[in-house]
Length: 364
Image 1 (tube, rainbow, N blue to C red):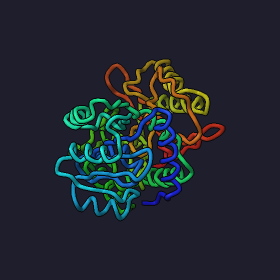
Image 2 (cartoon, rainbow, N blue to C red):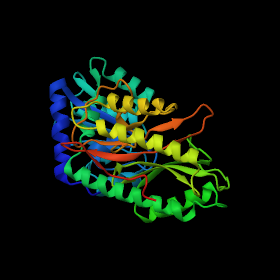
Image 3 (cartoon, rainbow, N blue to C red):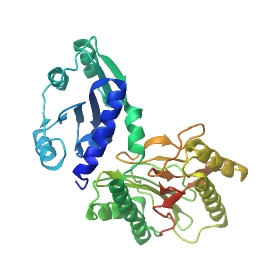
Image 4 (tube, rainbow, N blue to C red):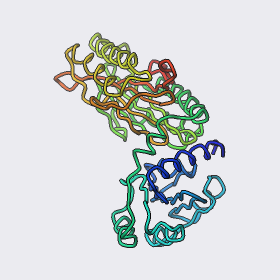
């Protein structure tokens, strides 16, 4: 894992300052194999499968629980948390460790409540009836939104790789190929590049706008385009790019669709700077598309980090204020009354004066 102990200490200081303010003696973080970031933020290790819990005290060393002995060995060797254990009964193990830390009658923070099994939460409440349980998920996401210099360096590397992946599309997205050919070409390039994980969506057709996780065995015709959402994770951090790639020369209608989507992307990016808020960016992209006579079927963006989808969501009404160091993907979509449309998007880094475009969906 490439993050330093200085980065670990920076995070721990910020979390413990929040715990002090909220009068919390211990924090319980929970992840699973898909959404790994809640625990990874503390441990610099991600689980390969199953569930993943971590106890973080206001003072002293953290303890984490993983689902398999081999995972514990890897976590101890590669991660920050050396006290990594397996437990046949995670609920009882958490209670025992929390009692050792004196958490029975104090405030207990919960990070990633959506990943805490109901039976485990019920067991904690039963065993600590006088404890005050506090959901601090958003508080820690607020810390995670703004990336350090170390994190930004990794994000930039991931974004460069992400743009390069589009070149793989050009190699195979030709008349007579199918979605599986494109998907396989990208996967082959991704794993050779050393990516930890890859989330991708794919669709094809004359005007594809709604994609699937898995490819179909659909043969590409001359009038088709391939839509891809490519989201690799490199050294713990995601970036995303969304491209609609015409197989041959795009039709006049496709050019119009792409121009409208590009105009919406540019309009949103102009407002994406420190001091402005996420909702304003979403609104201007939607207005641009609706002014052209179309609708925007999906939300036009979100933040990224240890997860491929983190707060803030770029949605109308979201008052989150942009700050330097945030990494955002803007991906406006547009659709006509027949359900035809396109989807485009790039990743950005917020700077002191505006933004740096990390990827380019015209890279192919």
